[in-house]
Length: 135
Image: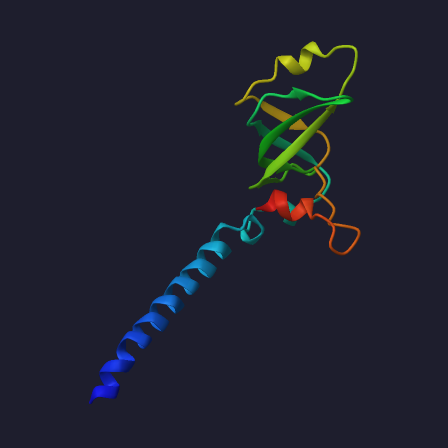
């Protein structure tokens, strides 16, 4: 009788750990954008993409950088696909930089080119910027 009572705390600890482990795996799987049916990586085809700007463009040495949220993609045959995911936008600096200063969060842009996925690391052990952006 004494051995049954002494095993109970060990069982409770194992059951609690297993429960938290399963909840963690499930929440990670559900929040990973790659598992969403409307993730942009599933629809890398020709067409136009509607993007909502999330932050104002900031000037860099040769480009302006902004982030946006992809909303939908239209193809040449007028089909529309809802999208989910964020995008990093780079605009080349030109003589008319005042155009980019007029872009504010909440503005909608229609892109002529479908954004590309960030390539994975070329070397083993190299920093994985693609994975960093996905998380």
